[in-house]
Amino acid sequence: MASTELPVRPAPVPQTSRPASGARTARRRAGAARTNLTLGAGPLTRVLAIAALTVAAVVWLLPMAWAVLTAFKSETDASDATHWFWPRHGFTLNGFSTVWERGDLPLWMFNSLLISAAVTVITVLVSAMAGYAFSRTVFAGRRWLFALTVAAVLVPPQLLIVPWFRQMLTLHLLDTYAAVILPQTVAPVMVFILKKHFDSLPRELEEAARIDGAGHWRIFWSVLLPLSRPMLAAVAIFVFIGAWNNFLWPFVSTSDPALMTLPVGITSVKDAYGIQYAQTMASAVLAALPLVVVFLFFQRQIVKSVATTGLGGQ
Image (tube, rainbow, N blue to C red; front, side):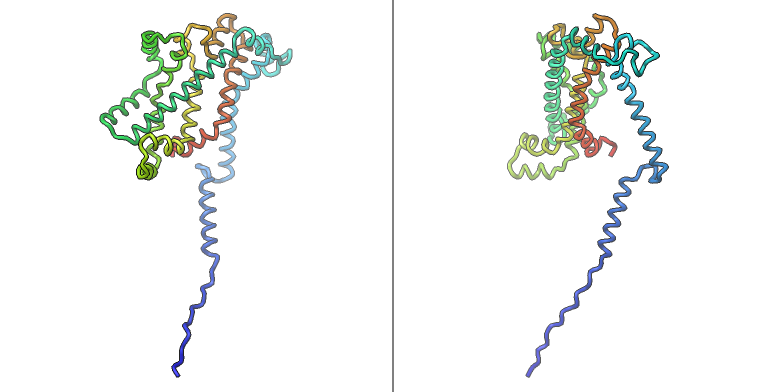
């Protein structure tokens, strides 16, 4: 009889923990490299870095703290240099109440909010569409038009006050919301930033959308914009802050008290009643409070946009 031999199976190789431990070691080294400071990882370097950041934070916060303290003082204590921190007569809300009574703060805040929101929406939409056109489309004169847009960044807005005023006068738009809003929507620097952001997005997503039959508008609205939410949020907050703090153009383009923004209205109160330090600081605190609230809501988007789009030097 022919004997049948069973196939001999090779013995299983015992698994060792060396590759896993090596991977963990590599990950720990990579994490340590990411957390190390540029000047070194020693305790002395870390203490010096924290001390330098603390000094910079104190220097930045000191004027704000002085403004808040002055706003809660009386006019007599605000002018007293010997009691600059703790007022002789205690803290009071007279500065806020006086500014609220003498001026029309609710109307000014409403105008500032309406104008800033309109400027932000229009600027972000127009800048995003222009950035997409420069980044993802090819048309005649694209390079020259983009070069002109970049060159417009170097033009100070103060030089455009007279052309803007004559244009609004020709269009019969003076003393209207449109006169205050439309010139502020021209933001070449935002077009440049969004164009560079769209350049960094992978083109494979656009090609996949084109295979599915999507056109330029569909790709822009449904593919690229959802991926650009951190950058759009950062652009929106910067535009909003600029429009909220803008004084010169709203002051020039309107003479109707019903259209005054908060910076223009606060200046009119100061000019009418003289310089009152407590009232001036109270007005500044009230004007800055909405911006602080907006920044607290959108600070994560701003930091994320700077960290992921190359604006932080990466």
